[in-house]
Length: 66
Length: 253
Image (cartoon, rainbow over all chains, first blue to last red; front, side, top):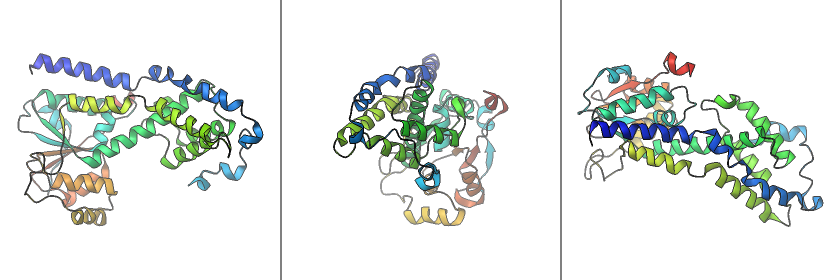
């Protein structure tokens, strides 16, 4: 490959790396879960075991999560 | 003893046709993460040597570290984006996720500070509880969709860029770095590196494979553990160890 060709390839690599980290692209995917979350909300709360109740203090201690 | 030199030494050289350089995981990790403090320096270094005919190699434990880093980064960023946009999953999940992100700190420019494995497992378990005992599939579906949306094509894109950069994945037996019928690095040598320098098993495996590679001229790392081990006999003297530390310019970005 010529030097010019290599330099063009590197421009492409740099653009791809920028896109890889682009939060705008990530933002487009954040609604992927919405339908499933809505479905969950329709489930009888007794069936789910009251998941929306806040966590007890002990369960929030990161050390106990190890 | 192995020479330890700054990577600026490599940038000053314009002919790398005889350079055969092994890259540490942290160099490739920072090259791909634009939030990483070493990002600009790592990418500039790889580009410079590549444009000047140098050859790069990396080994399996290095690849595993890259994948692990991007696993943690992808999940962390996806959760963070949802929370910042006030999209709820369950109160417990959202609450726990906020706590974890606060613990690791860093905000949008978190520079390598992502959720840890045990935190990801705990969040996964909170998703798996959705649906309760009788409808477990609900929670599973949620977790599986969560994985798909977090990663999408990211790991494939990384693999593609590594190929385009012509960084060779050096495997035992199928490259000129580890030719068949030659003495290959052993587990005993690796264990010895852990005991001698208190290296992590991944670091010891990488350094052991660098030391046992044929015709390797240099090793680039930003890990102080690796530098200390290299300057105390972990690498043969014909391999130069190049240390990449964040330049002031990179730190400001």
